[in-house]
Length: 310
Image 1: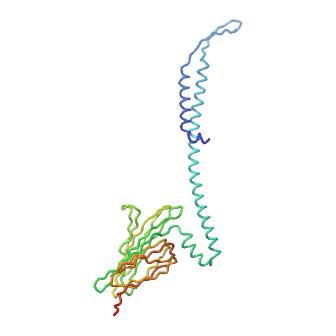
Image 2: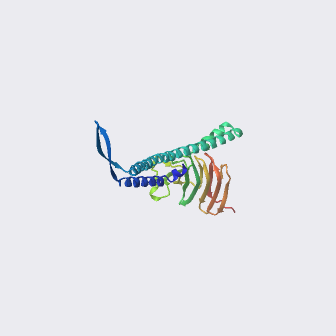
């Protein structure tokens, strides 16, 4: 059966050729005449019978059989292969869903044994039930002086990755508001899908000191897209004290800081993974977090003029 499924077009073609050839030869027949005698009403009568050679009849019947068999075989195996492909996809999807559910059930069972149910509910909602994760994030902070003001630009980049087995919609909602010690706005938010023509800009609305935008992004299973967001803040004081907390879990993060060399920059983190200071120079800092960061975790930082010591 496997041979027929693999080479069924060859078999069908061969049988069709044999059938057509036999039918063609069956048309080359010879007719013979034969005189027979019979008695009718007491008299001897004669009649002539014309006969076709038996060979032609056999060729015709055999040719019809081969041709019919080739047509029937083609139709049968065509539908069998079509149904197999459809069933294969169906069962593959079912297996993947079962595998995904089984993995989650095993993890849930393990966690329920070792942590409080209230904490587990948070982990389940944020991690185990997540279909899209954020990874390879970069928070870049550029601080510059403009007269008696401090300008603070945040450039936030990360990748959205669909870890589920079905297309999933993610809603991006960038927001920023003025505070008592600074004004701010979202400069732009862009979703990049690998090609320039596939870029998607999120429209930003600035009303009464409040910047906001919203966009639904559809990701296919296993698909990655890059998100780039730029935000500006203006501080009228001599220092910047700010916080930055993630609203979604993140895997791996780099924090890059550029600041005036006559200013100090100090950062404290609340990440569950260790935040390492990799570069510590005048005007430049780089921090690195390898591992998971939970929703609600983040940093607070202070940038202020260096104290002059006598």
